Length: 405
Image (cartoon, rainbow, N blue to C red; front, side, top):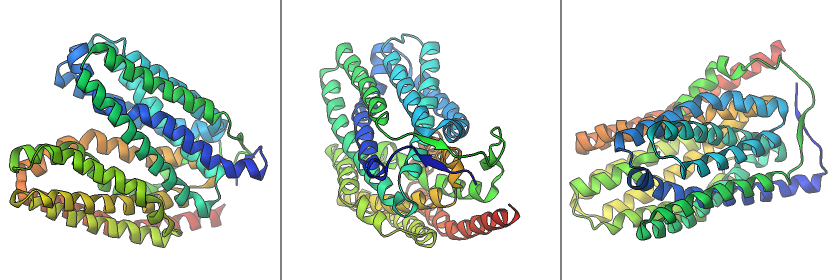
Protein backbone atom coordinates (compact mmCIF):
# COMPACT_ATOMS: atom_id res chain seq x y z
CA UNK A 1 0.00 0.00 0.00
CA UNK A 2 1.19 3.50 -0.76
CA UNK A 3 1.80 5.65 2.25
CA UNK A 4 2.84 9.23 2.83
CA UNK A 5 6.29 9.48 4.33
CA UNK A 6 7.59 12.39 6.34
CA UNK A 7 10.75 14.11 5.19
CA UNK A 8 11.26 15.46 8.71
CA UNK A 9 12.18 14.20 12.19
CA UNK A 10 9.63 13.32 14.82
CA UNK A 11 10.08 16.65 16.63
CA UNK A 12 8.87 18.59 13.61
CA UNK A 13 5.95 16.21 13.21
CA UNK A 14 4.84 17.01 16.75
CA UNK A 15 4.88 20.73 15.96
CA UNK A 16 2.81 20.21 12.82
CA UNK A 17 -0.47 20.55 14.68
CA UNK A 18 0.55 23.94 16.07
CA UNK A 19 1.55 25.20 12.63
CA UNK A 20 -1.72 23.99 11.14
CA UNK A 21 -3.60 25.76 13.94
CA UNK A 22 -1.69 28.99 13.32
CA UNK A 23 -2.46 28.81 9.60
CA UNK A 24 -6.10 28.08 10.35
CA UNK A 25 -6.36 31.10 12.62
CA UNK A 26 -4.57 33.37 10.14
CA UNK A 27 -7.13 32.88 7.40
CA UNK A 28 -10.22 32.37 9.60
CA UNK A 29 -10.05 35.94 10.97
CA UNK A 30 -10.43 37.33 7.46
CA UNK A 31 -13.05 34.72 6.65
CA UNK A 32 -15.14 35.79 9.64
CA UNK A 33 -15.09 39.39 8.43
CA UNK A 34 -15.92 38.25 4.88
CA UNK A 35 -18.88 36.13 5.97
CA UNK A 36 -20.41 38.99 7.96
CA UNK A 37 -19.96 41.81 5.45
CA UNK A 38 -19.55 40.39 1.94
CA UNK A 39 -23.25 40.22 1.05
CA UNK A 40 -23.68 43.88 1.97
CA UNK A 41 -20.64 44.76 -0.15
CA UNK A 42 -21.89 42.87 -3.19
CA UNK A 43 -25.32 44.50 -2.87
CA UNK A 44 -24.40 48.07 -1.91
CA UNK A 45 -21.01 48.69 -3.51
CA UNK A 46 -21.02 46.36 -6.52
CA UNK A 47 -24.76 46.88 -7.00
CA UNK A 48 -25.73 43.28 -7.68
CA UNK A 49 -29.36 42.26 -7.07
CA UNK A 50 -29.94 39.54 -4.45
CA UNK A 51 -30.83 36.94 -7.08
CA UNK A 52 -27.49 37.37 -8.85
CA UNK A 53 -25.60 37.24 -5.54
CA UNK A 54 -27.36 33.98 -4.68
CA UNK A 55 -26.69 32.49 -8.12
CA UNK A 56 -23.02 33.43 -8.01
CA UNK A 57 -22.39 32.05 -4.54
CA UNK A 58 -24.30 28.85 -5.29
CA UNK A 59 -22.38 28.35 -8.55
CA UNK A 60 -19.08 28.91 -6.76
CA UNK A 61 -19.73 26.23 -4.17
CA UNK A 62 -21.13 23.87 -6.82
CA UNK A 63 -17.96 24.14 -8.90
CA UNK A 64 -15.87 23.79 -5.76
CA UNK A 65 -17.75 20.64 -4.80
CA UNK A 66 -16.91 19.05 -8.15
CA UNK A 67 -13.25 20.11 -7.94
CA UNK A 68 -12.70 18.89 -4.37
CA UNK A 69 -12.04 15.23 -5.21
CA UNK A 70 -9.55 15.75 -8.08
CA UNK A 71 -7.70 18.42 -6.08
CA UNK A 72 -7.55 16.05 -3.10
CA UNK A 73 -6.24 13.36 -5.45
CA UNK A 74 -3.60 15.82 -6.64
CA UNK A 75 -2.58 16.35 -3.02
CA UNK A 76 -2.16 12.58 -2.61
CA UNK A 77 0.02 12.27 -5.71
CA UNK A 78 2.04 15.50 -5.57
CA UNK A 79 2.23 16.02 -1.84
CA UNK A 80 -0.39 17.86 0.24
CA UNK A 81 1.86 20.65 1.47
CA UNK A 82 2.64 22.08 -1.96
CA UNK A 83 -0.97 21.77 -3.11
CA UNK A 84 -2.25 23.41 0.08
CA UNK A 85 0.17 26.34 -0.27
CA UNK A 86 -0.81 26.84 -3.92
CA UNK A 87 -4.52 26.79 -3.12
CA UNK A 88 -4.08 29.18 -0.17
CA UNK A 89 -2.42 31.66 -2.55
CA UNK A 90 -5.19 31.08 -5.11
CA UNK A 91 -7.80 31.82 -2.43
CA UNK A 92 -5.98 35.06 -1.57
CA UNK A 93 -6.06 36.07 -5.24
CA UNK A 94 -9.79 35.30 -5.43
CA UNK A 95 -10.59 37.30 -2.30
CA UNK A 96 -8.55 40.28 -3.48
CA UNK A 97 -10.31 40.11 -6.86
CA UNK A 98 -13.70 40.58 -5.18
CA UNK A 99 -12.65 44.19 -4.48
CA UNK A 100 -12.28 44.76 -8.24
CA UNK A 101 -15.49 43.25 -9.62
CA UNK A 102 -18.24 45.63 -10.70
CA UNK A 103 -20.59 43.39 -12.68
CA UNK A 104 -22.16 39.94 -12.56
CA UNK A 105 -19.92 37.96 -14.94
CA UNK A 106 -16.60 38.84 -13.21
CA UNK A 107 -18.34 38.21 -9.87
CA UNK A 108 -19.40 34.75 -11.09
CA UNK A 109 -15.90 33.90 -12.27
CA UNK A 110 -14.28 35.00 -9.01
CA UNK A 111 -16.79 33.09 -6.88
CA UNK A 112 -15.99 29.95 -8.87
CA UNK A 113 -12.25 30.44 -8.31
CA UNK A 114 -12.94 31.08 -4.63
CA UNK A 115 -15.08 27.93 -4.29
CA UNK A 116 -12.53 25.74 -6.09
CA UNK A 117 -9.60 27.04 -4.07
CA UNK A 118 -11.40 26.85 -0.71
CA UNK A 119 -12.72 23.32 -1.24
CA UNK A 120 -9.41 22.01 -2.55
CA UNK A 121 -7.52 23.70 0.28
CA UNK A 122 -9.73 21.97 2.82
CA UNK A 123 -9.01 18.56 1.27
CA UNK A 124 -5.26 19.21 1.10
CA UNK A 125 -5.23 20.33 4.73
CA UNK A 126 -6.97 17.15 5.83
CA UNK A 127 -4.39 15.12 3.92
CA UNK A 128 -1.66 17.10 5.66
CA UNK A 129 -3.23 16.40 9.04
CA UNK A 130 -3.52 12.70 8.23
CA UNK A 131 0.16 12.54 7.34
CA UNK A 132 1.45 14.61 10.25
CA UNK A 133 -0.64 13.15 13.07
CA UNK A 134 -0.90 9.47 14.16
CA UNK A 135 -4.35 7.94 13.50
CA UNK A 136 -5.27 7.78 17.21
CA UNK A 137 -4.73 11.53 17.59
CA UNK A 138 -6.35 12.84 14.40
CA UNK A 139 -9.82 13.50 15.80
CA UNK A 140 -8.52 15.46 18.80
CA UNK A 141 -6.16 17.39 16.52
CA UNK A 142 -9.03 18.19 14.17
CA UNK A 143 -11.05 19.38 17.16
CA UNK A 144 -8.24 21.75 18.12
CA UNK A 145 -8.26 23.16 14.59
CA UNK A 146 -12.04 23.57 14.73
CA UNK A 147 -11.81 25.48 17.99
CA UNK A 148 -9.12 27.67 16.45
CA UNK A 149 -11.31 28.23 13.43
CA UNK A 150 -14.21 29.36 15.58
CA UNK A 151 -11.99 31.72 17.53
CA UNK A 152 -10.73 33.30 14.33
CA UNK A 153 -14.23 33.57 12.87
CA UNK A 154 -15.46 35.28 16.03
CA UNK A 155 -12.64 37.83 15.91
CA UNK A 156 -13.22 38.42 12.22
CA UNK A 157 -16.96 38.82 12.73
CA UNK A 158 -16.21 41.66 15.13
CA UNK A 159 -14.12 43.38 12.47
CA UNK A 160 -16.89 42.77 9.96
CA UNK A 161 -19.32 44.44 12.33
CA UNK A 162 -17.11 47.54 12.38
CA UNK A 163 -17.13 47.63 8.58
CA UNK A 164 -20.92 47.35 8.56
CA UNK A 165 -21.11 50.22 11.05
CA UNK A 166 -18.83 52.40 8.87
CA UNK A 167 -20.65 51.23 5.72
CA UNK A 168 -18.16 52.72 3.27
CA UNK A 169 -16.51 51.20 0.17
CA UNK A 170 -13.10 51.71 1.79
CA UNK A 171 -14.13 49.75 4.89
CA UNK A 172 -15.37 46.82 2.82
CA UNK A 173 -12.26 46.88 0.63
CA UNK A 174 -10.10 46.77 3.77
CA UNK A 175 -11.90 43.57 4.82
CA UNK A 176 -11.09 41.87 1.51
CA UNK A 177 -7.47 42.96 1.90
CA UNK A 178 -7.43 41.50 5.41
CA UNK A 179 -8.87 38.20 4.22
CA UNK A 180 -6.40 37.97 1.32
CA UNK A 181 -3.49 38.74 3.65
CA UNK A 182 -4.68 36.04 6.02
CA UNK A 183 -4.49 33.39 3.31
CA UNK A 184 -1.02 34.56 2.28
CA UNK A 185 0.12 34.28 5.89
CA UNK A 186 -1.45 30.81 6.03
CA UNK A 187 0.47 29.81 2.89
CA UNK A 188 3.74 31.00 4.44
CA UNK A 189 3.01 29.05 7.63
CA UNK A 190 2.18 25.88 5.72
CA UNK A 191 5.60 26.08 4.03
CA UNK A 192 7.11 25.51 7.48
CA UNK A 193 5.59 22.03 7.64
CA UNK A 194 7.64 18.98 6.65
CA UNK A 195 7.10 17.70 3.13
CA UNK A 196 4.90 14.64 2.71
CA UNK A 197 5.79 12.53 -0.29
CA UNK A 198 4.17 9.39 -1.70
CA UNK A 199 6.33 6.36 -0.95
CA UNK A 200 4.99 4.47 -3.95
CA UNK A 201 2.00 4.05 -6.22
CA UNK A 202 -0.55 1.42 -5.31
CA UNK A 203 -2.92 2.24 -8.14
CA UNK A 204 -2.75 4.12 -11.43
CA UNK A 205 -2.52 7.83 -10.69
CA UNK A 206 -5.59 8.61 -12.75
CA UNK A 207 -7.92 6.44 -10.66
CA UNK A 208 -10.29 8.22 -8.34
CA UNK A 209 -11.21 5.16 -6.30
CA UNK A 210 -13.43 7.12 -3.91
CA UNK A 211 -15.95 7.60 -6.71
CA UNK A 212 -16.50 3.82 -6.78
CA UNK A 213 -16.56 3.36 -3.01
CA UNK A 214 -20.32 3.08 -2.45
CA UNK A 215 -20.19 2.54 1.33
CA UNK A 216 -18.08 5.67 1.75
CA UNK A 217 -20.49 7.54 -0.51
CA UNK A 218 -23.38 6.51 1.76
CA UNK A 219 -21.50 7.67 4.85
CA UNK A 220 -20.81 10.99 3.10
CA UNK A 221 -24.49 11.35 2.18
CA UNK A 222 -25.62 10.73 5.76
CA UNK A 223 -23.14 13.30 7.01
CA UNK A 224 -24.39 15.79 4.39
CA UNK A 225 -27.96 15.39 5.69
CA UNK A 226 -26.81 16.11 9.23
CA UNK A 227 -24.83 19.13 8.03
CA UNK A 228 -28.10 20.81 7.10
CA UNK A 229 -27.95 22.18 10.64
CA UNK A 230 -25.39 24.70 9.34
CA UNK A 231 -27.76 27.42 8.05
CA UNK A 232 -30.05 27.20 11.07
CA UNK A 233 -28.46 29.87 13.27
CA UNK A 234 -27.25 32.08 10.42
CA UNK A 235 -30.39 32.09 8.23
CA UNK A 236 -33.40 30.12 9.47
CA UNK A 237 -33.58 31.06 13.15
CA UNK A 238 -33.15 34.81 12.48
CA UNK A 239 -35.99 34.68 9.96
CA UNK A 240 -38.07 32.64 12.42
CA UNK A 241 -37.39 35.19 15.15
CA UNK A 242 -38.44 38.06 12.90
CA UNK A 243 -41.63 36.43 11.67
CA UNK A 244 -42.83 34.11 14.44
CA UNK A 245 -41.58 35.46 17.80
CA UNK A 246 -41.46 38.67 19.82
CA UNK A 247 -37.82 38.17 20.77
CA UNK A 248 -35.54 41.23 20.73
CA UNK A 249 -33.13 41.50 17.78
CA UNK A 250 -30.05 41.15 20.02
CA UNK A 251 -31.01 37.52 20.64
CA UNK A 252 -29.56 36.62 17.22
CA UNK A 253 -26.12 37.80 18.34
CA UNK A 254 -26.57 35.95 21.66
CA UNK A 255 -27.29 32.70 19.84
CA UNK A 256 -24.14 33.03 17.74
CA UNK A 257 -22.17 33.79 20.89
CA UNK A 258 -23.52 30.64 22.55
CA UNK A 259 -22.48 28.62 19.50
CA UNK A 260 -19.00 30.06 19.09
CA UNK A 261 -18.19 30.10 22.80
CA UNK A 262 -19.33 26.50 23.30
CA UNK A 263 -17.16 25.22 20.44
CA UNK A 264 -14.15 27.10 21.79
CA UNK A 265 -14.68 25.75 25.30
CA UNK A 266 -15.84 22.17 24.73
CA UNK A 267 -15.08 20.85 21.21
CA UNK A 268 -11.68 19.42 22.11
CA UNK A 269 -13.10 17.73 25.24
CA UNK A 270 -15.94 16.19 23.26
CA UNK A 271 -13.57 14.92 20.58
CA UNK A 272 -11.26 13.25 23.12
CA UNK A 273 -14.03 10.77 23.92
CA UNK A 274 -14.10 9.52 20.31
CA UNK A 275 -11.21 7.17 19.53
CA UNK A 276 -12.75 4.35 17.46
CA UNK A 277 -15.23 4.01 14.63
CA UNK A 278 -17.73 2.46 17.01
CA UNK A 279 -17.48 5.43 19.37
CA UNK A 280 -17.71 7.76 16.38
CA UNK A 281 -20.93 6.14 15.18
CA UNK A 282 -22.41 6.44 18.66
CA UNK A 283 -21.41 10.11 18.76
CA UNK A 284 -23.18 10.77 15.47
CA UNK A 285 -26.30 8.94 16.72
CA UNK A 286 -26.37 11.13 19.83
CA UNK A 287 -25.85 14.19 17.65
CA UNK A 288 -28.99 13.36 15.67
CA UNK A 289 -31.02 13.02 18.87
CA UNK A 290 -29.62 16.27 20.26
CA UNK A 291 -30.55 18.07 17.05
CA UNK A 292 -34.06 16.61 17.26
CA UNK A 293 -34.36 18.04 20.77
CA UNK A 294 -33.05 21.41 19.56
CA UNK A 295 -35.64 21.57 16.79
CA UNK A 296 -38.44 20.73 19.21
CA UNK A 297 -37.32 23.50 21.56
CA UNK A 298 -37.02 26.02 18.71
CA UNK A 299 -40.62 25.19 17.82
CA UNK A 300 -41.62 26.38 21.32
CA UNK A 301 -39.90 29.76 20.95
CA UNK A 302 -43.10 31.70 20.09
CA UNK A 303 -44.06 31.07 23.73
CA UNK A 304 -40.90 32.71 25.08
CA UNK A 305 -37.54 33.77 23.71
CA UNK A 306 -35.51 31.84 26.37
CA UNK A 307 -36.43 28.74 24.38
CA UNK A 308 -34.20 30.13 21.64
CA UNK A 309 -31.19 30.11 23.95
CA UNK A 310 -31.93 26.55 25.08
CA UNK A 311 -32.40 25.44 21.49
CA UNK A 312 -29.08 27.00 20.49
CA UNK A 313 -27.32 25.22 23.38
CA UNK A 314 -28.77 21.85 22.34
CA UNK A 315 -27.91 22.50 18.69
CA UNK A 316 -24.26 23.34 19.35
CA UNK A 317 -23.93 20.24 21.55
CA UNK A 318 -25.24 18.18 18.66
CA UNK A 319 -22.88 20.02 16.31
CA UNK A 320 -19.86 19.12 18.45
CA UNK A 321 -20.90 15.47 18.75
CA UNK A 322 -21.41 15.28 14.98
CA UNK A 323 -18.07 16.92 14.25
CA UNK A 324 -16.13 14.56 16.51
CA UNK A 325 -17.81 11.48 15.08
CA UNK A 326 -17.59 12.60 11.47
CA UNK A 327 -13.87 13.40 11.70
CA UNK A 328 -13.05 9.94 13.08
CA UNK A 329 -15.22 8.27 10.45
CA UNK A 330 -13.88 10.26 7.51
CA UNK A 331 -10.24 9.52 8.43
CA UNK A 332 -10.78 5.98 9.68
CA UNK A 333 -12.57 4.70 6.58
CA UNK A 334 -10.18 6.31 4.08
CA UNK A 335 -7.09 4.48 2.79
CA UNK A 336 -3.93 6.13 4.11
CA UNK A 337 -2.54 6.68 0.62
CA UNK A 338 -5.72 8.36 -0.63
CA UNK A 339 -6.66 10.64 2.26
CA UNK A 340 -6.70 13.68 -0.03
CA UNK A 341 -9.31 12.44 -2.47
CA UNK A 342 -11.39 10.81 0.27
CA UNK A 343 -11.38 13.97 2.40
CA UNK A 344 -12.23 16.00 -0.70
CA UNK A 345 -15.21 13.75 -1.33
CA UNK A 346 -16.34 13.79 2.31
CA UNK A 347 -16.10 17.57 2.26
CA UNK A 348 -18.70 17.81 -0.50
CA UNK A 349 -21.32 17.45 2.23
CA UNK A 350 -20.45 20.92 3.47
CA UNK A 351 -20.88 22.39 -0.01
CA UNK A 352 -24.24 20.64 -0.43
CA UNK A 353 -25.46 21.98 2.92
CA UNK A 354 -24.35 25.49 2.02
CA UNK A 355 -26.00 25.37 -1.40
CA UNK A 356 -29.28 23.65 -0.62
CA UNK A 357 -29.76 24.16 3.12
CA UNK A 358 -31.04 27.76 3.16
CA UNK A 359 -33.62 27.19 0.43
CA UNK A 360 -34.81 23.78 1.65
CA UNK A 361 -35.02 24.72 5.32
CA UNK A 362 -36.68 28.06 4.64
CA UNK A 363 -39.48 26.22 2.85
CA UNK A 364 -39.69 23.47 5.49
CA UNK A 365 -39.45 25.48 8.72
CA UNK A 366 -40.86 28.88 7.82
CA UNK A 367 -43.54 27.31 5.67
CA UNK A 368 -44.35 24.44 8.00
CA UNK A 369 -44.04 26.11 11.39
CA UNK A 370 -44.02 23.73 14.35
CA UNK A 371 -44.59 20.70 12.14
CA UNK A 372 -41.70 21.77 9.94
CA UNK A 373 -39.38 21.95 12.96
CA UNK A 374 -40.43 18.45 14.06
CA UNK A 375 -39.96 17.01 10.56
CA UNK A 376 -36.48 18.54 10.40
CA UNK A 377 -35.63 17.10 13.82
CA UNK A 378 -36.85 13.66 12.78
CA UNK A 379 -34.65 13.87 9.68
CA UNK A 380 -31.61 14.59 11.85
CA UNK A 381 -32.41 11.74 14.26
CA UNK A 382 -32.96 9.25 11.41
CA UNK A 383 -29.70 10.20 9.72
CA UNK A 384 -27.81 9.89 13.00
CA UNK A 385 -29.21 6.41 13.59
CA UNK A 386 -28.31 5.36 10.02
CA UNK A 387 -24.62 6.15 10.44
CA UNK A 388 -23.66 3.07 12.47
CA UNK A 389 -24.89 0.46 9.93
CA UNK A 390 -23.36 2.50 7.10
CA UNK A 391 -19.99 2.53 8.87
CA UNK A 392 -20.19 -1.22 9.49
CA UNK A 393 -20.86 -1.78 5.77
CA UNK A 394 -17.89 0.42 4.88
CA UNK A 395 -15.61 -1.50 7.26
CA UNK A 396 -16.68 -4.86 5.80
CA UNK A 397 -16.15 -3.55 2.29
CA UNK A 398 -12.69 -2.26 3.17
CA UNK A 399 -11.77 -5.62 4.75
CA UNK A 400 -12.83 -7.52 1.62
CA UNK A 401 -10.85 -5.15 -0.58
CA UNK A 402 -7.78 -5.63 1.59
CA UNK A 403 -8.12 -9.42 1.38
CA UNK A 404 -8.38 -9.31 -2.42
CA UNK A 405 -5.33 -7.07 -2.57
